[in-house]
Length: 291
Image (cartoon, rainbow, N blue to C red; front, side):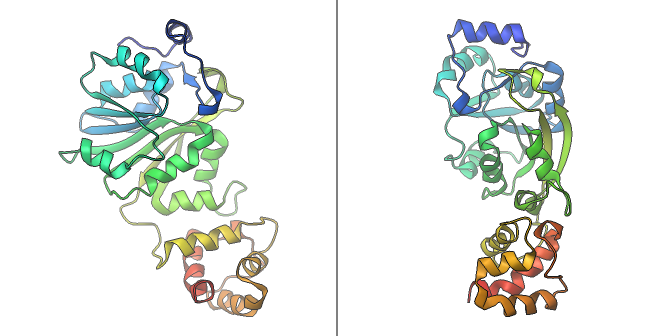
């Protein structure tokens, strides 16, 4: 395989096509073959797997994925990469490049188009830092049940937030949003020195195994997340203070009664509640928030 994942080869391809890296698109190209191989292994990619890759860039991870997978569907927003990727993969029969903004794409339709024989579906990507959360949530919330695993390289700090447990400093509304739909596991950390250009912070590879059923059952998902956002609005304040601010001072007694009803101390802070406690809380607060 003609790899692009060394510093020298990456610089050569950038020079050949006179490609200017755009900071605004979060373009940081990985130049370490061992890490690329480990990302593929972390996703358990095999010949029964169809991989959806976001942001193939120069195609280093794409090439590694194509060797292991049945098919790779690479979704790229930057049309300037088209001549590079076309030349790179013209001889590859199992790679489709789709030039589209993944945040505007119909994920379900894309999957239906490419997954035709019940193959395993994985999402694998080196995600730009600035759109990590929207892209992850796009796949977690997609109206499809066939995505099995998501393995992404993201900012280390964000990976720690996705993986955090109640009471930890990194635990927040993003932790709950991800853990509501999946089981996260940090697979490895990646130093900033293995990228061109070099980012300011280290990265981490995290794996999300999607749940067949959500971790908790709630009657109103939108309200469930509204309660969570309210509880984390001001981290230093108590749960009672944050909820009163969100739902109005006139609801203070009603909120207090409902907290006591489900056995949650109103003096606790939002970061100490489990996802199960938030599910209970959203159910009892629903008459207040949505009368």
